[in-house]
Length: 334
Ligand SMILES: C[S@@+](CC[C@H](N)C(=O)[O-])C[C@H]1O[C@@H](n2cnc3c(N)ncnc32)[C@H](O)[C@@H]1O
Image 1: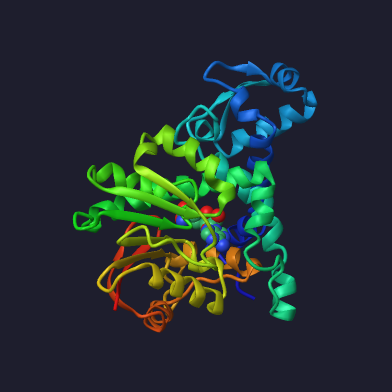
Image 2: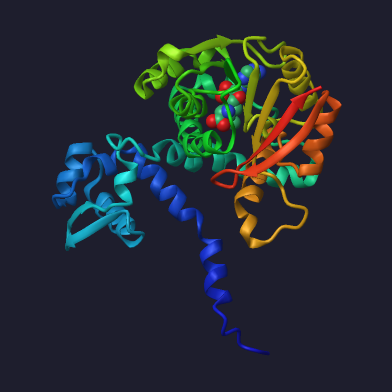
């Protein structure tokens, strides 16, 4: 028997136990631990009293958070926020709280259903489930906020990579709170924007767009892309929509987008593209594929997107890598 000296055992053990970090961060956010800390060291017992939590458990959890560099332990029982932990504080405009709430809660619960899908091929949570998500105010808002946070840098890269100067109005179909449309409009001052999404997101989008300073340039149109898509724009953005749905559902969405556009108009399809051969460099797209599996969605290859585009009367054009593993595929309505 050979002894593995390459660190594989350590790496494997780290992967096996990786979920503890997700769960710890989730509960830290949900219970206000990060918001309660500041740069000034505080006693764990004072933090516990402020949050009405158990003092001994707060001490142990803060110690655990110190081990992953989200807080700093400054003395035996006192703690301050660390730079990475500050990204989990509500007051930080770049905060990642939406991701933390969503990943440690709904997403982990969902991923557990892969066992069911492995054995039956059936999605563990059913299709989409956006109505159920939006009916839950904590998880619904966390999800929509996380989506907008993820979209901002991707759309900033899109605004640099794609020329929007020939469009009168860009409509983000399934645009959520408006992270993408915000960045596209900020980079293109003469452009009008619209969001076409479920009516339930209207108020949240209004708050988000107003904080982003573009509310007066975005029209929110409530509706379902399974019924129709409003013909309000000469360019449609479709980001992280197709990956939520099965092939027949995508055919309907793409067909309704095509019906809303004129020949020559563009549809900017933004997704993580599944490579033909996966390497460790592709963890983001395969992780996303596992997240989509329970809701009957999937990540797709460029060949699959090209086939879907052509079946809906679009021609696949340029494909450009943007940010966070996302690419834009420029489709032209034929
Ligand atoms: C994965 S999120 C993507 C959000 C946004 N495009 C982004 O990338 O940040 C999917 C979006 O589709 C919207 N959606 C779900 N079902 C819809 C439907 N039937 N009609 C319109 N929008 C829908 C959701 O409300 C949500 O905003």
